[in-house]
Image 1 (cartoon, helix red, strand yellow):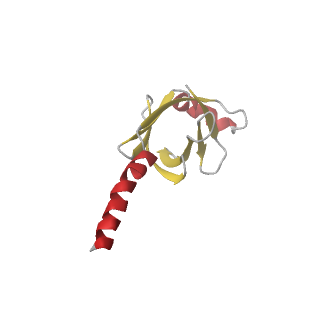
Image 2 (cartoon, rainbow, N blue to C red):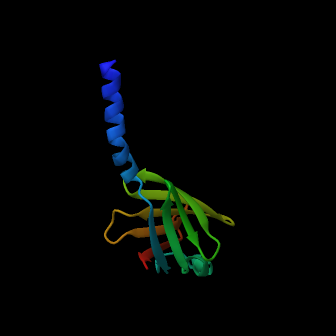
Image 3 (tube, rainbow, N blue to C red):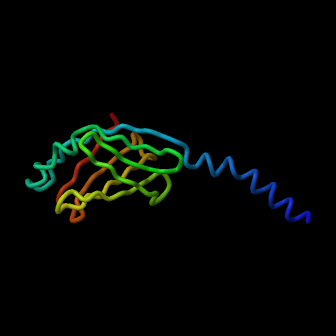
Length: 121
């Protein structure tokens, strides 16, 4: 009985730590053209050069843009999130690193030929 109570107290004590690990956050990014991308990527630039908003709300991670991009993201390591967006024939992989200084956001095609880097707005 004592062990059950002790375990319950330890669990209750750890709840604030678990909640703090996924605090709500919002970061705005603006992509820039990447001169190393293949020339066909330039056609997609208008979709990426708009402001993108990365948010964590109630543990749900999402990236949205005014251009209609909405991506659900998942943690892949501490403070780093990844999500995928299908843009016609191009599958775009988004990676947000909130632990970097300053925070970074990268979008690139699955084959790596197209790449955009964002700066915190």
